[in-house]
Length: 305
Picture 1 (cartoon, helix red, strand yellow):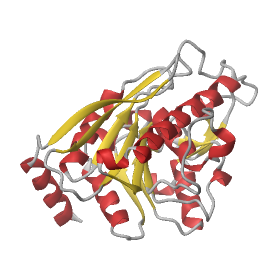
Picture 2 (picture 1 turned 30 degrees about the vertical axis):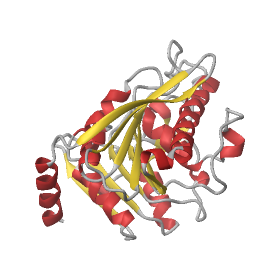
Picture 3 (picture 1 turned 45 degrees about the vertical axis):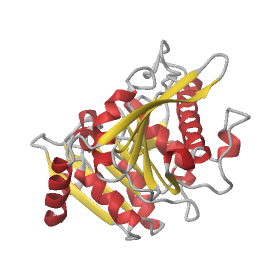
């Protein structure tokens, strides 16, 4: 592992500016225009490239796709195509806390997941133009973006699709996903049939998006916007019961501030995961980082004592 990380660092240092960026409109209609920034290796060979699509955080009401530039550049320096997308911020101007309206929260998830599907569809339809291997499309997201990619990966496309003209290949599956402090509404969405390789990182004391199983924002059960979510630790353990590939990085005592950690720094952990998956390796590991922050006394995770 240490040898790999050293080689990855040296490689990235040697080719620090060896990528090019193109801004593309991936969807447009009478009322909506969605762009993405695509990074590819500067001198890419004719070999088809694996692709990462990144979805930024911001509570479905803010954030910018530029927050994914650091990760995208890093991956492009290491032989990937990488895109970071603009998507519908459905919660903008709406209450999203415990006093909000639950239908708006679910719609926020749905619009973001649909825009991810639109971006995916764009790359599948234009795979030859951008030299993309459509069997090696990964997705990643931070916070709200992580919730978008988790639902985008496991929701039934036909049921949840909002755009009549959007299509994905039958039985399409992403090659894998990376989730920074994300959660899903129902663990049962992830089955033996549709499970994909997943990397998670999350603070164990996150009070915004639960690390385990709890209400979003830890809202009380009588709140108008109460929604139970299954966070990184719960999804990781569920994936293991399905014998899927899953990797979890836990920041003990950490809060939601860790939602972008591996996207902004220590990106070699993501590269290592992607490289292993592309090599056909099964990944099942849990790494615990001590942050120096005290875990809550009610913390149920013995590994954070």
